[in-house]
Image 1 (cartoon, one colour):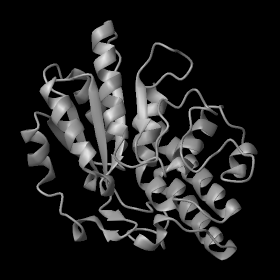
Image 2 (cartoon, helix red, strand yellow):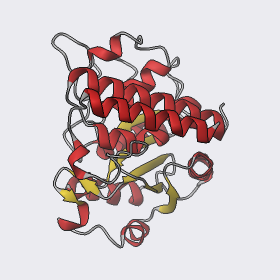
Image 3 (cartoon, one colour):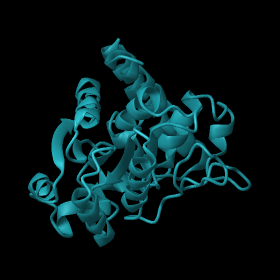
Image 4 (cartoon, rainbow, N blue to C red):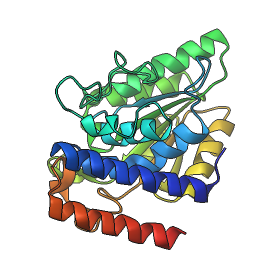
Length: 272
């Protein structure tokens, strides 16, 4: 188990890998990957044992953010430092969306937004039925919550009181179409989730202490499933990407790459 300082350092290394990937291939969902990487790192490093079949499960429902997933898989030694730079290239296993065909450690093929929470519901129900006490974690995007299937899943999960499921909502408030609330507003999100019988926690999704505390609170919840609203910044860590909807999916030029590396190096010095 890593502490918050160690996890923050790992997450920053993963940010380097995300930027490397997208710069190398010239395309990729970089903004959302940078917003979700802290939560993803904490879950895979401390909660999801990829060496075991009997373990917690993690569904990355916002499947377009594979740069974050592959960065963490590189950290875990499942992907080599050279291989992750083949992201989205012809004949590469590193597809633009997670695929269980290439990596059995991926718990669900995702990318068609709105379906991951339903998959997590099925996994959590199966674990309860089989007497398996491991958790199921699902990461969804806030833009993704415009899809109605999520709300059917919320309703079912709350009805069955699946306390072995925790859903992290990456609340960066931006989608490919701009601010999420320009479509159909999600607020009051916490109140809506409470009405669906969820225990709701709100955190700074870039603060490792708060992330670890929320994970433990979710594991301790005995009566209700847990929804963690993780307030994040799209493009976190890169000055010209932060809160900029243009960086939902975009390539990184050589000049931008140099700036990004400088920003990440400065962050490493601050965190040290």
